[in-house]
Amino acid sequence: MSTPSFAIGIAGGTGAGKTTVARTVAETVGEAVTRIPIDNYYQDLSHLAFEERQAVNYDHPSAFEWELLREQLETLLSGRPIEMPQYDFEVHNRTDECVTVEPSDILVLEGILALHDEEIRELLDLRVYVMTDADVRILRRIERDVIERGRDLEGVIDQYLETVKPMHERFVAPTKKQADVIIPEGANRMAIDLLIDKVQAELPDGSNRLDPVDRKLSFNDRTVD
Ligand SMILES: Nc1ncnc2c1ncn2[C@@H]1O[C@H](COP(=O)(O)OP(=O)(O)O)[C@@H](O)[C@H]1O
Ligand SMILES: O=c1ccn([C@@H]2O[C@H](COP(=O)(O)O)[C@@H](O)[C@H]2O)c(=O)[nH]1
Image (cartoon, rainbow, N blue to C red):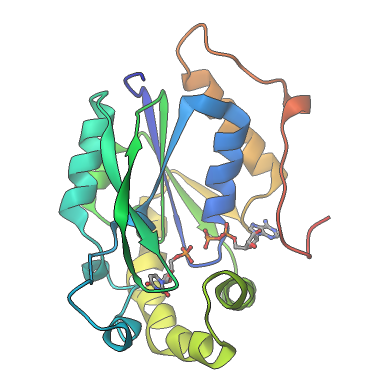
């Protein structure tokens, strides 16, 4: 456990490649990185029936418990562990269990609205926006939601048109202006390498640093070699 010396926020539309960027940085830099997926901070909706939860707008800022996220981020930044809530997309709700998350040298906060909240932005040292065309993002989302999140095609398309797209235009895309760095087309190798260089430069003296040849970048997506 250590007191983080550098915090990164990675925002961008659904399917843009945020998780892939965050995961690649974390896997490359290893135990020095603590990942904080904002999805874990969706409001607890246990008081609603499944059908009601299906109808919630999950792309509006009000869907998230910002107070808890701010509080837990500050706790990690002060070098103390948190009990991070966990989220189950298949049932649209938090699970009953929390996971103990220890702070490490680098914090990576990741999610559609990672750059939305002003107080959270001020806690970040580097703000990244992953920018990928809407057609690519919806294709990735259809594949992911059907395979991993138990959805059907019609439902994914309806949700996209009714809430995901308009909320993206209203709340997510404008946060691009808050970014220090914009990564085009998701996790491109050059951008990831630059990000990893920056992260490694921020590690305290004595931490293990990887040579570029040891870095891996992989997708579970058929469009990339
Ligand atoms: N640069 C990229 N090129 C091709 N596929 C990618 C790229 N970045 C991400 N993907 C793939 O797109 C899908 C969505 O990526 P993910 O990182 O989960 O997006 P997000 O977290 O922004 O919703 C995943 O299947 C991932 O493997
Ligand atoms: O219960 C839920 C909670 C969220 N969503 C959708 O998830 C995405 C955010 O996740 P990404 O990994 O960035 O795509 C958001 O667009 C919500 O619409 C959901 O469908 N159900």
